[in-house]
Image (cartoon, rainbow, N blue to C red; front, side, top):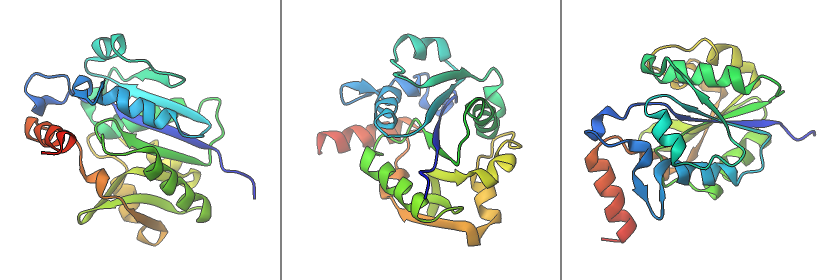
Amino acid sequence: MQTPQIGILLLAAGAGSRMKGSVKQLLPYRTLTLIQHSINVYQSLAVDARLVVLGAHQEEISKQTHWHDFQVAVNADWSQGMGHSLSYGLELLLQGNHLDYVLIALADQPLIERPHLEALIALAKNNPDKIIQSAFSDETGPPCLFPAHYFPELLQLNGAHGAKGIAAKYPEACLTLALPEAGTDIDTPADYEALLRLQSGS
């Protein structure tokens, strides 16, 4: 079977308004920033295309981030929500790339590491045409992989809602991989403080 072509779409456009003045993407994590950590992790995967969508604070973020071979897109309408940034980024990612899957990811899930992503990709390769989602607590979500069959619907997304609603329409087409690390995303100062405690082992 031919190796599927996979593109990464990393979403980092939000303002992080609940962080009370801090630029969430630039919060320190280990020796890097949250977004640089994510870029480095997703850069390590053997895929065919990579694109990150910026929006709020894009100039400040760009000055402090090394993108490796990620294509960088700036969504001027980022305030319309995640769905808009997702469809905007996917449209650009598909220009010049014939992809069988898109791996949709968020830049504020710092516990996601390469082995987790490789396991998701392996599940996708072994189950063609299935939507692959991470499962954490009682939820499912990103990182997730959507096959090309669903690209037209992803390209129609707008507003705040992302790809989860599309997956919910096709439960028979969805597979999940238990990935509790995906449940840690950084939206508030309390989330960040908990991450730092986890990092220090306290």
